[in-house]
Length: 447
Image (cartoon, rainbow, N blue to C red):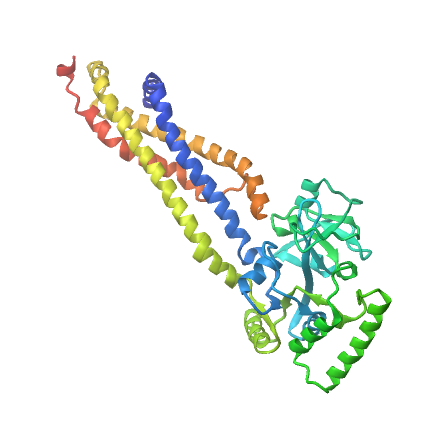
């Protein structure tokens, strides 16, 4: 009979105490697994690897809000940019691709964010080396829609499903009458795209209520482009005002203006830069962002910087605190194992003495006690890993519903490989003193 078999039989004799002791280790490991996996997913989501764009251009304001609204769709858009500005960026020789998006509505069913964009959005990589895969067709008509995998799952939508939008957010009572038809479903990506409904820009602009009052739009246009009164651009605006007012009169005060770029706006613009000879793409992006900041009323943000600040200042600190707490729980559990085994030594002195009388060496007795400690910790560690990933099955839907963050219960963090060896080391340490007590047991006195 080997040492671990003897240790296992000894544990069975104190089954309740041993089970509770091992359970305390399991709970600590379970919490650590949950913290590691969830924060690992957060870290991978909120970093450059999850964003396939060099710059995000939006109205001046908070750079963090711009990234959270345009990429992650968990914050309201700051303001809007003139559609003409998007066209200028698109024609800039330093820009390889410019992709506009419009935001502000959600689906009536499920409250999923709606993003108006162009087909180019689905042709570019959403992350380095990864492209969006669509089941079905892309945009064919203005009121076609492409939905994310999570939208399809939660709402039970598929190709051919129709839906309506709510203007201004899920709390709004302003429902649009226009119906969109699902023509494509995205394959799951583990990104905010899974929880997004995409419509074509033309369809977005054609929705009643998305028009901006003419005077307000022209005023914004003048301020943005710093139009000089009396200049050539100013005369163009006056002509457009006249045309727009005529359209308003014809449509009973509502101007949609789908053919007038001045009367359109976008929430943000994703840029993929191309570096000129002798210059890196990063340098081009930095110089371009500085130029945008000095020019019009806009900002160009490299999404990695605000997200790094968020991770470092807020998310990272929370992770460290939670990890420290779980480590303390595991250490306390280790002390519990020490107390359990040490307290049992008084009742086991006769048992140990009999083993010694039958020929067991002092080192053998010492090793059996260490084996008990290791078995308790190891069993608790394995149970904790299973419980941790099991807990994620229950937590994942809640996290997704509250934050929009997709949690995969099968996600694995490399640090999990260290847990069991670390627990074995901890078990060896806490088993030393009880083992020495067994080692020094006086055979003659206890028999």
